Image 1 (cartoon, rainbow, N blue to C red):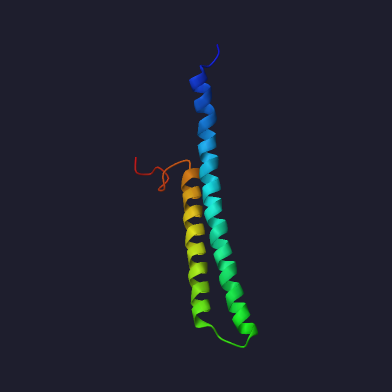
Image 2: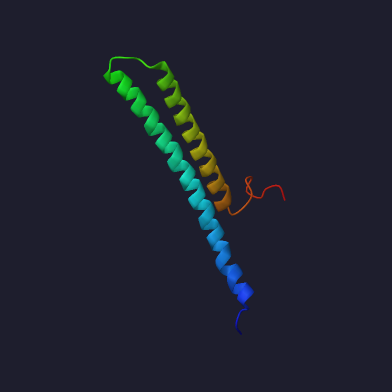
Length: 93
């Protein structure tokens, strides 16, 4: 028996939504990594001139912190989506 066009369309769209979501989070991660690199460059340029740029160092700390938080949230979300049972192992039943 053949599937209806709507069923085939749904079967194709569901994996694509997951791919789109993964690409969106990867895009955000790359942007945050570029922010870190930009801030590191500013710090290194100031150090090359013999200057301690406190503003650039704070910007670097913030960029690293944002990247760490984002990666931790993404790892937590992946762990939850990969978990076959509830967090407590199904012991609450």
